[in-house]
Image (cartoon, rainbow, N blue to C red; front, side, top):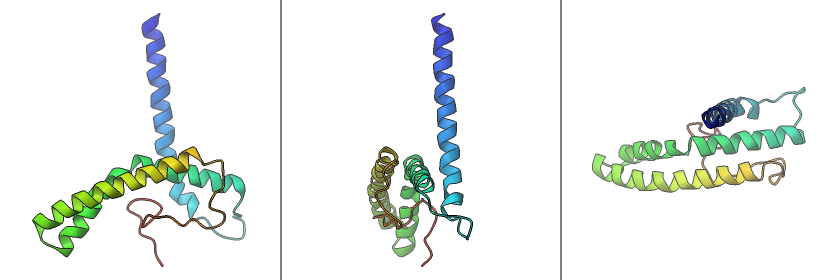
Length: 130
């Protein structure tokens, strides 16, 4: 009987992880929807904020190879790897904390109509075009 309950707990955890992953992957597509039929409503703002937070928490680790790559391109291999790894660790922590704050505070529309972040982009691997 105990093993049956234990299996259900793991199944629930696996389903929750899959839902979080799907939200993190789909959120960028909804964040860029514009047009006359797409209004910026309160539910859309908070769902985008939740998706952005989950995406930043799940994929914060990609900042390490991004920073290593950028530093190696700007300097030599050894220096770029060491400096890039350190900077990547810092940016990983920064992205995770900001993502966690977004997940915890997603029902509250703190940012208003514009999202100004201390990060380079809302999501990892997506460069903002100015």
